[in-house]
Image (cartoon, rainbow, N blue to C red):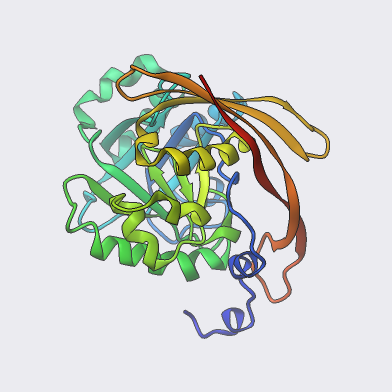
Length: 331
């Protein structure tokens, strides 16, 4: 940790959030796509508008996606001396493959810097151009990518707490699982009050308030899933209230739940005050032999105070906390 005045006097939003018992569940954005580019640090606050040089084709592709109101999360990852290739840029593109799905479909490319803009346009706007980049595509669908936010220029908590978690993961787990597991420092993807925060792809799960002692379980998936309850922000394949119900279902179903193809919807809700919602999550087992559904009511159980940003005197705001009631598995 830096010893400069800023950090000495800083109250970190994530420490306030944890101390006040804020539950991170339901804070994962609902997404259909991820677009992830290697970009050298340091990263400015508004990385896509301020990072220089950013190819015009990348900006055009992102503007097209945003103007089309696509549910897309754009992330930068820091080059890695072991993973990266000088003169080339790595691009990950993940997309929701169907209404029912278990994980996002992955595309990885390593292209010369000069082709980055045209690849971005092909992925996000002009799909008919994509075959031109086939020679640069990487066959890495078997590799799980874990991204830890260390974007301190957005909020100091991300670098202060994110980097040590990244460092532990990178040094202790990447070596042992080098063929199917990689770890990256990444830019902001939302929710720095939950730092250290992580996105697990291709699954699309968000994690927050991470502690070193639960990393082995998160990475290896070799123990009781219930120990991860307090750290789970939600699955980005579902809307907010369905995410809250999905966590409880996952705790009941266990690890096999991750293999099930799922789809969720809000049947009815208090749209004005956000006090409650009735949700339904349909699922099919990995082998397709069983299809069923859960229904539940998600309702407010109280509130806590949190801080959206770190600082010497951060503003505290009240946030609702939710519980799952009347969870029923349909025949």
